[in-house]
Structures are given as C-alpha cells and as structure tokens.
Image (cartoon, rainbow, N blue to C red; front, side):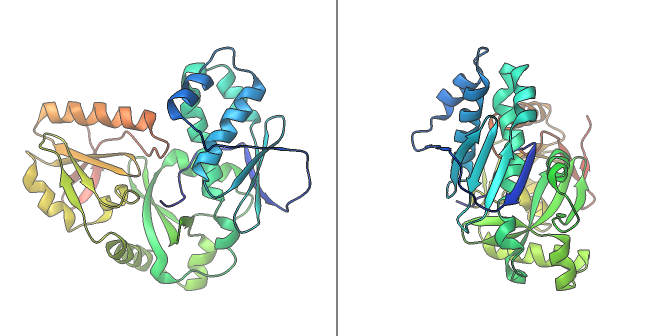
Length: 305
C-alpha cells in the first residue's frame, strides 16, 4: 500500500536527527474504534492527546519511527534518515474545545505531515517522467500544506479541476508518493498541458483495470485502492459509465480510494450519493471532499439541484 494519507501539523520541518530523551510510539496494536473512543473523551489530557496523535501518525507513516520528544512535540524519522518535527500546539488548541470532532481534527492535521514526508528523497534528484501521476486533492489540503511551506522550492504543482477539487501532480515510486514540485517541473521543462497528458498516460499504465461495482442507483469505480479519485481525469472512461445512469453523471470523491456516481435524473440516487459521501468523508483517513460534481459537455462542473 502506498504511503500518502494526509492530515495537518502546525509546523512540519525537515531537520537533522539529534539525540533527545524520547518515547517511541508502538502502533502495532492500534485499534481504530478504541482510538476514536479514547480521543473523544471530554476529560482527555494534553499528554494523552499527544500520545494518541502519535499513534495515528505511526499508523499512517508505517515505515517511519515516531517518537514523543516533548509536550505537544513529535519527532518522525523516515527510512531515508531524514526527520520530521511536528508541533501539536494548534491541533491541541482546536481539539481541546471540540471533543466530538477530534478524530477529524487529527486526520486534517496529519494530511500535511504525511504530505511533507517524501520531500527528503524527492528533492534529491529529478524524477523519472514515467513515475509522474495526477491525483485529486481538495482546497483545504493545499491551504494546510502551504501553512508550513517556507519558500517556493516545495510548491506543489497543481491546477483547479472543479469546485474545491484540484489536480495535483505526484511521483509514484515503490511504496510511496511524493508530490511533484514546481522546481521539478521547471527542471524537466514540462508545460502544464504536457504534464497533464504525461500524468494521465502514466496513470493508465499503473491502473490498467477499472471495474464498476453496484446494482444502482449509486455505483463505484474500483481500481487499485490508491487512484480511484484520479479516475475523474480518465476522459474515455466516462462515456461508458453514462450508459448506466439516468440523466447526467453526478459523482463524488469522498476519499482518495472512493469514486462514486449516480444519475442526475434519479432523486433517490442523489440522496444516497450525498449521504454516503458525507459518511465516508467523515470516517476516512484519506478524505477528499463531499462536493457533488456533474459531467456535462465533456467536463466536470459543480452540481446543484
């Protein structure tokens, strides 16, 4: 399973490893239900929140070593030897006054943390163009990522798709995805149109088989468990899917591995799509958006009933 899950940090910086008194987090016995119950406890302390946040980070960054190095402070050592520092001041401030929404708060803060993880290796050299892919992320993801980006070196190459959905470009390597930066794009002399075409071509190779599941009125497109949301960009795919619905195609990508759709002429399907998308978005650690979009004249538009 590839590494990118994101959620947000107040600060996430690549730093040199150093010697500190710390507590290594063991997430081998992690249980999502128990974790959610504990973190929503109204009497949760700052130290308990830090430990639960660290457990969630360790689950998301499975190959990394996560340590609690201080009050509201984590150190995350990546497999390439680089280290991420995560400071939880803002996350705790927000979680302290909103117990019921703490799982989503943690997921949201972890997005940028996980997104920053691949940079140490990604910036070491230019990627093979055969590894560049297109992924779908929402506006909040970009906003959160920009909060800790200190310069233009790490600027993610992105373009608006529709509503709050954006196309981001990434480097798919064994076991992880690193976001494609503006520095990478300029060095490879790739214009945006050429970059999009290249990324979609690579995506077709990485995801050669796509199946439709469900008996209606809501269907899902299933690929490899990583790039379902990216299938919004597969132009030829949607001609065939239109035959399965009544009216125009209305779709949602509540998480990166879920692409759902129904027909605009079927009120029951629209209700089910909206409710299911909201539920999956609230519960998923790879959340994207609850926005419904409609396929019209060969392009996606925001759907309004």
